[in-house]
Image (cartoon, rainbow, N blue to C red; front, side, top):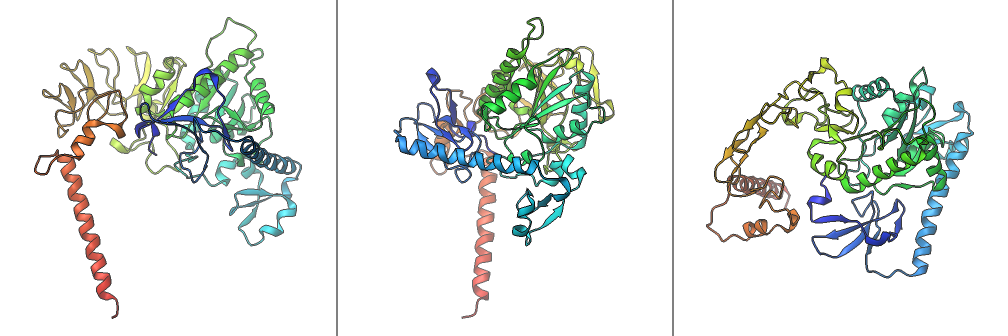
Amino acid sequence: MENPETLGIEVVCPEGGLAAPCCPHGPTLLFEKGRGGRRFYACSACRDRKDCSFFQWEDEKVSEARLRAREEVNRLKQQEYRNRFEELASVLRHEKKFCDDCQMLLLPAEHGAHSAHRTTAVTAAQLRRPSLLLRPLDNKKSNAQYLFTDRSANFLLDSLASLGYTKVLCVGTPRLQELIKLQKSGSMKSLLLDIDLRYAQFYSQNEFCHYNMFNHHFFGGEASSAVLKSFLKEVGEEKVVMVADPPFGGLVKPLANSFSLISQTWKDQQDSEDGPTEMPIIWIFPYFFEPRILECLPSLSMLDYQVDYDNHPLYKHGKTGRRQSPVRLFTNISSRCIILPQEEGYRFCAACQRYVSSLNKHCSECNRCPSKNGCEWKHCSSCEKCVKSSWKHCGSCGRCALPDHPCGRGQNQQGRFSCGGLDHKRKFCPVKDAHKNKPKGQTVDKRFSRHCLKLKAKNKSGAARQQKKMAAQPL
């Protein structure tokens, strides 16, 4: 999914603590079109207007009647869900059926209405593992769900148990919640915060809260907030940790703000001031978001462990090159305390005091294991840093890049690809516009030429197919 941060749209933190208007997913976020562009409010959870049509300009005046109508629609929707799930809680297990077409557990009175659908009786094992029963949401512009493989979920569970954590706040990690509930010892407790309301059919109010992690909104109001506060309070030898797995297309800044608010809530619940000042966090996200994550939460560091998913076509463990999973763990827990499995190719670096990938070789010049993508890197004496092994130093650009890179662009690797600037978004890049409007006959880079040739071939083949189709039609 494309991130709005790269498309000329940026999240703005309103000054003065002004309250944002609400949509069915809670308080909206304030966005800005380009630097100094017009600002507008839109849904925090959905990037597609088809999924949530809410849109309001920042300076737009909304009538009181329209505001009341919005609030009433949102209230009725939530009340309908709450009433139904309260009824389900009182139904005996053998009376429950699951409708695969509607993706919901059925009340006894609803069995007849769903007789034409694919319905099955629900076993006790299925009720304990709802992520295997429910069909994962797959809308990449709103709430696409990728579920941990048992390998990744068990690694997280074993690591947290070895570190002595007894309470796990699962933010968008339903499969980790399931494994914790399946533990026979019952030594570890968990609370799931998720925007997928279907999980309310399987967990009590003390085990699940309907939650939007992009705006820290609890759909259950103060009752759900109280559940979180009670869970975060550490009594005796209890230790709390948060594990969050947000959608990869999510904006980093709103997510970091929500996680900071949860950390502050955790801190407010503690009686002693002698312990840590920050809640232990594991944030699961692709490695290429590292600069943005560390900008928002500097106390986090990235581990080399590759997280993989059952229902993702590419993010699988064991693949090589660009096919391997780019998803990593960002945590404020000491890196040397999290032991990565040696049987999967991880090793302990004594100099860095952390576990790293087998191909992540320690660099004596940089004094660290530099690789981010799981492949071997090399040190460039001119750049005075380590880079990917496929890159070469370019004297014209004054930096390392791919051998066939468009020379003369991107002097700053942290900036835009076209010009290296940091003061604008990709959509508004002046170099990109100049390149697009270049006079005929002027040379273009090899990558752009290959792109044009592919388009030309595609159009040519499409025209040929259309001509053949028309010729086959009877006169």
